[in-house]
Image (cartoon, rainbow, N blue to C red; front, side, top):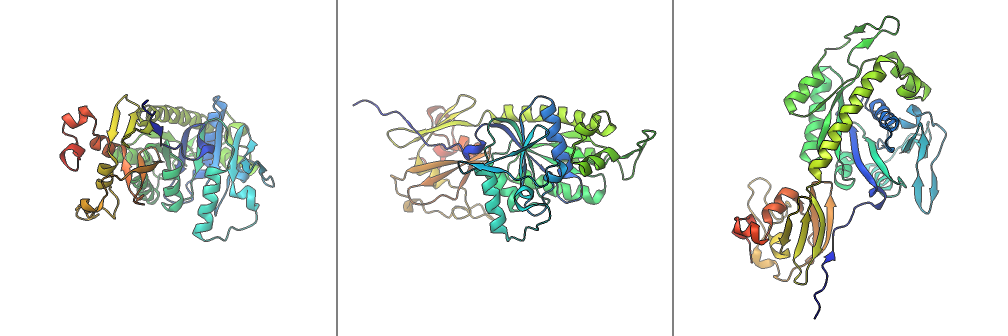
Length: 386
């Protein structure tokens, strides 16, 4: 009998995001630090460098991108049940502000807001992009978690101002991203000194250097500072981003320097992520075969994967003690589906109905049962091998 070809199991997530090279969130721990202004100007700067750029305004309750891009009153069209982004200044974008209008409050409970986020992730015809910049709402809630797990974020930028109160909240935002395994592209310090429009002199309105000190203490890149320039304020009022309004202003020059460092950090993170799983298949015996970006060919028995499930139902979160009785797991258990979780983990749907475990890539490498890993004393070989 001819040997059956391995069957592919790994999905690609949202099809509408499949042709986007880098998805980067721009967040802040608190409001009022200029996060949305930074996001839109970063998107335009990348576009002016020759990249194909999209902008997703994920702030459902306080969308500001239509105003910043000068597109009030416009509405996205729908074709074949897909939302077509509005294009302004060379950037394709979608926003709740385009759907609800500029003066209509969004009075929704969280489940409805999250449903709109799912629409923006799965039903927007972005096409092929080099970057999708995601303008997050302030804080560390459901939107951030959903995007981290479902949008396969390449990384996150945290925007802060120099005041200590903003830095303290930005630190929490950074830790939120690291806890959900989203790489940090870097920190941007906004409103870093006032630039006089007449003489060009810089006056420190707030303390200086806070963003750089935060980056150093958290051991993440510092992308640079953007000044408090009247041109930035006026560009937002006019709906003409900074590089469109005055590309020679001090803020514009600072923005271009930040953008250059941003692109370099994203490229470096992409090179690291290339070592993740490229393909997951199943052989005739039902074993999972994972092809990793570094060339490693991993082998996993579904039984051992199920026994080593890291979810709270199977492992006590406080003590680390395993709750799952191995005798309750059928020896012929199978993996029916593999789902990518961000760019850091896989989730498995087992034939016994269990599907809540999130297996980080480093855990999967520890659990590998290929000949070389078993010979090297992998965790699977030491513990629950069959």
